[in-house]
Image (tube, rainbow, N blue to C red; front, side, top):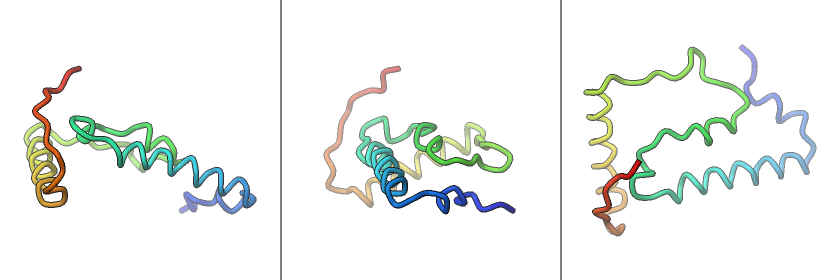
Length: 92
């Protein structure tokens, strides 16, 4: 098995700092999402990695997906209990 982070070993300090900044921008964009954006697939974030998951992405069937969405939304009530709420509908 190859090291998925071996590319970092070849980077000089300036390149490593640039990579850290690039990744922080993407992480902040994900962290700072709100509303319906919390629920979406984040291919832009995943594309920052030089490797792909073995076997590709696995997508759950609808019933399992919906149970996961409900569980995720319930976790927001616990973890962000005091965050403002919105009744804005999703718009494609």
